[in-house]
Image 1 (cartoon, rainbow, N blue to C red):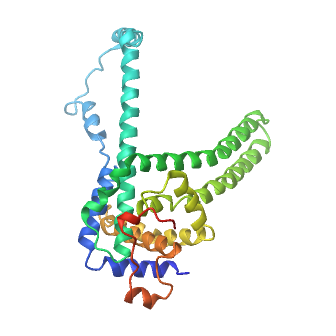
Image 2: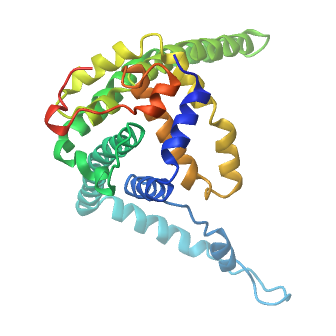
Image 3: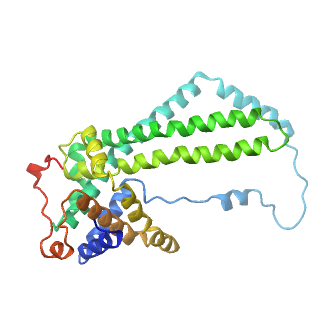
Length: 305
């Protein structure tokens, strides 16, 4: 089995001469999935409201007479039937928008991964490969939701441990080392209960790649096959991800500009890892450079791994 350094070498060799399109594909994918946004701070603008003119001290006006009226007006608004309907409407719209965003993001995620699978496999994937999985958009959406549900179930023990120890800390005597000791035990227990959830996340990590390459696969089938191919490979994937921490820190120093090149580098590396553990890369390094792997055509994309 290859190591992280070898996957990176394969990724860089395939990105050579393809950086432009790869950067564009990953940039558009990030923007469509919400990764391109930035936050703005309005603290300075609000701070100007409270500036007083010049250096002359002026008496602070007494607004105490208006406080009661303001509170009463707010209470009246909160009691209005239309206000409750407005809050419900905003919540419903937010839910619909969130689900629609997840729907689009799911298809983009699979298309993004399919682009890099093709790139590593020696294809010349086109830009529109990014949108190629919109034809299975609802199945992609279902896969993301199902995977999230499974991970949430693994998270329940963490919540249970936190609640149990939280109650014990609250009921412990206020003096002595009782509360401190219980808090320390709680933190250790929470950390220990998080580990199975992390292991589960790595177990399901290749599900989207499988559906991206084989769109005829079902949701549960993709999860099941991911668990099968990740058996014995979870630590290897962790090491591959660990190898990008330094690059991520350097990209952060460039105010995020470096991620334009880091993202394709990472995605190509993960695609090489996926093709390797599914047996689609030659075992010998030299053989890979001489004869790149050939993916099944679209008509056979439902082939089992």
